[in-house]
Amino acid sequence: MESQGASASISKKRWVIVLSGGEGERLRAMTERWLGTHRPKQYCTFVGSRTMLEHTLDRAVQLVGADRVVTVIGRGHRGFVDESAMPGKVIEQPVNLDTAPGIFLGMAYVEAHEPDATAVIFPSDHFIAPEKRFLQHADRAALMAERLANRLVLLGAYPDCPEPEYGWIEPGLSAGSWRWSSRQVAHDVVSFHEKPNAMEAIDCFARGFLWNTMIMAARLPLLRALGEAYLPHLAARFEKIRRFWATVPTATPDFAEQEALTLIEAYHGLARANFSHVSYNVVLKRPWFSPWATWNGAIGGNQNESGRRYSDCRRQRLFRWSI
Image (cartoon, rainbow, N blue to C red):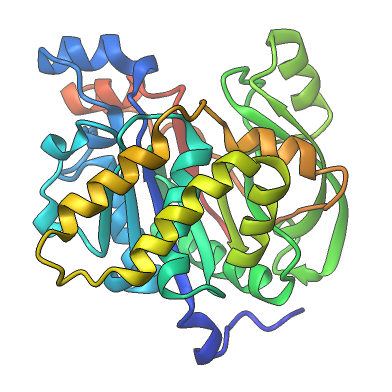
């Protein structure tokens, strides 16, 4: 088995990009009933005393340190967060255009500071437990991305039902050199199935496909190449943002205003783009490796208000990780 510990020189080049731009439309009815107003789910406290975003940021800090976390939020989301208490850089998108712009915006910031870094991408709307084991998987994914620079490493989850609301991954051949338990084995990805219909989901489940967590790791040069190949117009826009961050000192008196204007100009006229669409194009030409997680469903039984809210989120991603 490959070494599970990255060298200090490599691990210092890891960053986490946290995606927090979603509007939480699937849970809008629940959050409005609960709070009296709509709030995207990543800014809600379903269990414990912290929001889903705060839990995600805590995992990110444990993985790479506070200075190497970039959080991409949606337009108008600053009112949901205490930015002074958040680690690293917080970037508000001028308009919400799905996952691809969010990923490439965070990537532009990281590239401006460390062009050859490894980025680990965390969605902010996952329930994950236990976090220690998850972080072991995330660390291994980053190590794989560093060692296999032309591969994007995606974490998948073993399903417990034929859920049509999730994306599915068809695993291919295993990579025996990247095995850390009988079930935790890296595989090529054969195909993706994004939110299939009910019958297709049953087929995916029966054939041993896995759920797509959208938690991934990749070297920045690879992500840049994917953007230039499959989303060239978007890549060109975000290159302008990267140059701004690389050349304009943050101590510049009107830095915030210049930054906001640069973002507005870059986003003007951009079409929506989902990063999964990039993966559909890439999968036949550049197989991906995926170490798998296990899924245990909702942590059930609690019938108090917090427990009911948790159960209402059953169709969200609640991942339980094992070694």
